[in-house]
Amino acid sequence: GQSLEQPSEVTAVEGAIVQINCTYQTSGFYGLSWYQQHDGGAPTFLSYNALDGLEETGRFSSFLSRSDSYGYLLLQELQMKDSASYFCAVITGGGNKLTFGTGTQLKVEL
Amino acid sequence: GAGVSQTPSNKVTEKGKYVELRCDPISGHTALYWYRQSLGQGPEFLIYFQGTGAADDSGLPNDRFFAVRPEGSVSTLKIQRTERGDSAVYLCASSLIGGRGDEQFFGPGTRLTVL
Image (cartoon, chains in turn brown, orange):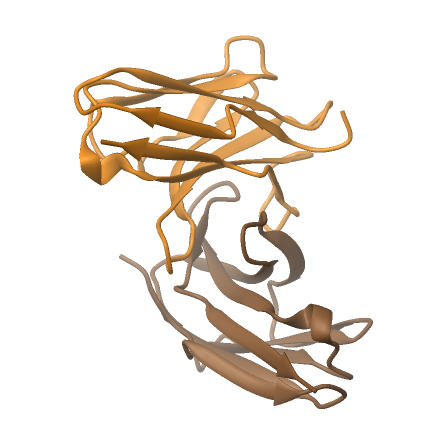
């Protein structure tokens, strides 16, 4: 089976940088995705890493180390609207089936 | 439509009843996924369609759950003899091709409550 670990909560101030870590144990690992979900809303895609290294998309970056079974999401210049839950998800096996972690609730304060 | 839509948005039923949940994916998306999400948890994979066929149904918890996508667009998730433990938000997502890492576009979900 698969297991993913993320911190349950992270708090940061507006304008700061925050890193959300994700460690995983899987078989047949193909890649790591990150999704954002606001309370009562639908998950929305942020990033996908299939290879080791850093992927940057605007204020958000995602990193993967396959040898360490570890990844992180980096959010820069935090804004109040970034307050949400962030989920890492692994892709294993055929197709694009996602196995999600339990999520990290990010609270951005003034 | 512009995004994935799901109906109904809320469904309250009694234990033992049958329910159907509908998902309209983004037009042209060949892959469709069903997940369910309990409070405080991440979405849990149920089933994934590539076109009309179920490519992976390994997440369906038991034979009370069944899903179809007869014409390769709209999908229906069917739950027989509902149990209180089936209460959750059922999420549908679609992606253009279904290749690994393809962005999945999620609908707003159907909140199912089994009394």
